[in-house]
Length: 135
Image 1: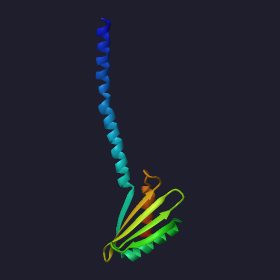
Image 2: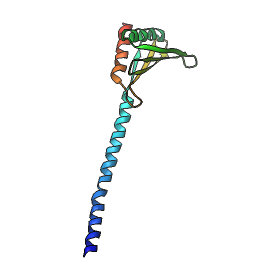
Image 3: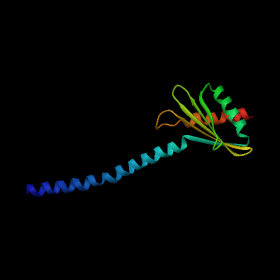
Image 4: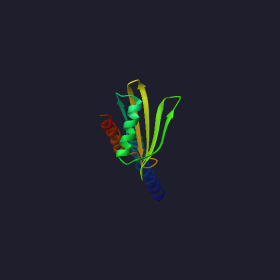
């Protein structure tokens, strides 16, 4: 009888614990997709109807107004994309200024507070201040 109860208890626990696996798997996948979604949302894009040189000047003006220090400002000759790097005490900011046409320019801003944490509010504010500087 003891042997029967032990086997019954083990089978019951195995069946009960196997119900946790789908719940844990679902929770892990939801957490992973939320992290990926946050990563995607941490990058802010905006297209301006202006020449890339004007947008670059407006972006530099916006960073200056926000008192964000520009670390580098380089033009990639091959792609004609301006790459700006800026830094605050706790944020690393990367800005791409890409001419789409002669009078259309796309700006992509990424503000990172750590390797896995993006600050979309700061990125959005840089875009808004660039828009304001363009008039």
